[in-house]
Length: 288
Image (cartoon, rainbow, N blue to C red; front, top):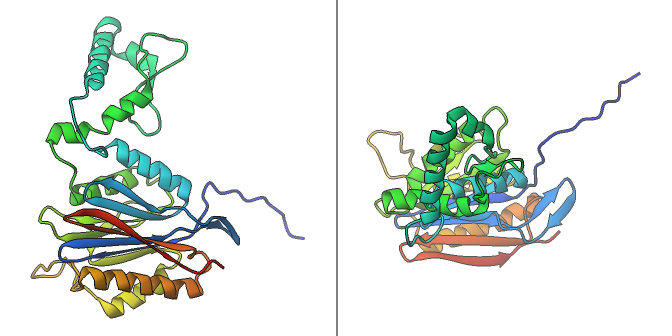
């Protein structure tokens, strides 16, 4: 006689595949738009690519609820806006907090406020009306903190370290998200960083994540096989392809993967990042 037990998991795998290729002066990041669970398709038009900064793009597969939470957290920790002007609301909020700490004491002030999960803003509890500063207005200011402090957008290598720290911080209850970060480094060269779920990362010339990664990675190894930046003497982790060749290669990868992987398909979104900015291209894939 077997014992029946209900199993519950806080995670789900919504499938999808992400690919990134770094070139001499560009970076190509691509992902399909299918989001599914089991044998059911939840939506056929869901973008897995997010713009974190002017020169940083992230594509993620896995549990899309965790992916969205991770994207919002990263956007709140760096300059995701286009800048402009000093954030007076942030200065006023800091002054209010300092005054409260002097008037009521440090422990009392900490008891008056709660800190949300993303650690971005202080929110007043309903039973106390000492601070009426709205968390959404605080987040809009917090998203510009890095830019106001450093007078520049966060670079892609700096964003890579921030993403690693964020994932490692949640290592005991990790984000079920498998990320690939791409962009341009401080020298204008393409860069790709690949991650596991708990923040270990490596700079590579190309990477694939998601349900179709086991199909695409061997093909990319055969076509590219860029040197590891850990080898001595140090070499650039970029591919020898031109921008148009990299785009064609990505399209070929996804056309092949959709023939075998039921969690990849519907439409391909390609984001090309170079010195001129970011542009996007789309291509239809199999819908079955």
